[in-house]
Image (tube, rainbow, N blue to C red):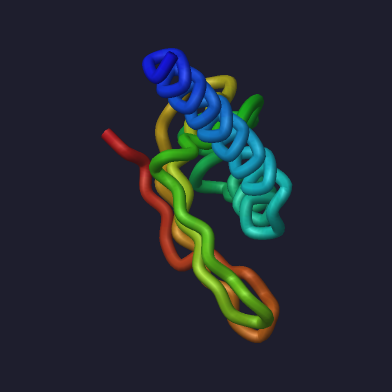
Length: 110
């Protein structure tokens, strides 16, 4: 009886963990800084020169951070960018000041 209870508790914790991960991932994808980063990447001439026209942008959730409140904030994302000329991982760092996001830096990962 006690063993079944522990198994149920562990299964519930696993399900809750998966749900929290999924909800967090969706919230990041819908966030203002992530959308800003996507728009920036799609329009940056250096990135376009490297990869050609951008086809997809995929978030590496566990290698990203997002923290903002009011007019200030910071965000860092590791993204896989697929373009006409190939695919590369890109690290991008954003900063929010006076309510506006800007790119602090970005670099392709080797």
